[in-house]
Amino acid sequence: MPKRLQALIAILRIPQWIKNFFLFAPLIFSKHLFQAEFVLAEIKAAFVFCLISSAAYIINDIADREIDRQHPVKKNRPLAAGTLSVSVAVVMAAVLTVSWVVMAMAFPVEFLLVALIYFVLNLAYSFGLKHVILVDVFIVASGFMLRVLAGAYSIEVVISSWLVLCTLFVSLFLATSKRRGELVLSQNSEGYEGRAVLKQYTLTTLDHMMSVNAAGMAITYALYTVSERTQTIFNTENLIYTTVFVLFGIFRYLILMNKYPTEDNPVRLLVRDPLMLLNVGAWFLACVVIIYSENIKTMLSAL
Image 1: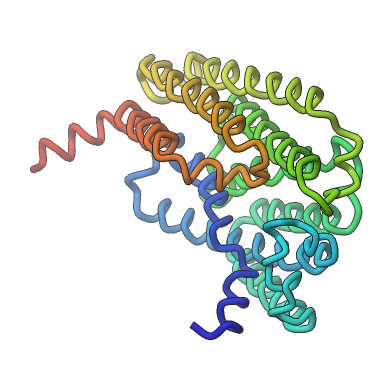
Image 2: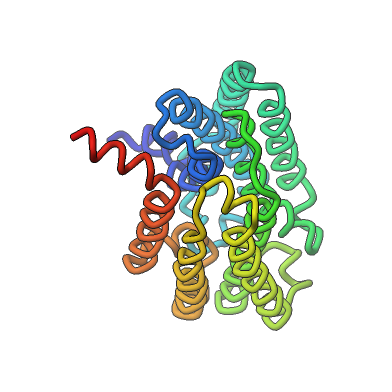
């Protein structure tokens, strides 16, 4: 593959698109997983967010290209490495932005509004807010929450407040772990000091923040599974048993974080561990079996 084409693909950060699976949470928990029109709408919505996130990543890479050159891994990004010009990156960002706006206009106005907020927050992050302590973490975390809201608005369903809170804690947990990895990397790498905001954090503070978020995540998810609204909608009390997978995932992530202390990419930390992937798959399967038991029985009886 020509180097220029490799650079064009690399700057899109396609592996990061996995974050857009958060859009599918409302689809699963609204009992529409087996309805083709809802699935198709969610897939289209996720693709819109793939375009948005790639445009945001390109803009961030343009803003960070100088500091990325000092990073042991990010120095290989197209703009930092010089394999792609800034002018080409600007054109790509513009094309992606126009494309996602046009596509988003086919969805409910609430979806378009969430998409715009997500994009504007990313711009604000790239050009200033990433240097403000705590604000930087909350903006990174907001991206996950906005994805869940966008997923709900794209298929016009209402999601549980407990699920929204759980997403908030998950988002803050991942965002805080990202900062922790960056801080450890900056402390252990010669010639790389990291972003300026890292100097305002300490490992102790970030570890405390992760502990609070981990506890919040577990508690809010457990409360979601036993809430009266959840049990009424799904007509079962069995969803509580999926909490074991959430707890296992939290503990496994903490182990991985200590095993790879300089890893500043939560997605990479998650997807390269077979046990974590197996746990996520088991959680998903358990949720589907419990939530859609009646649908599954109907499908099996029809065979």
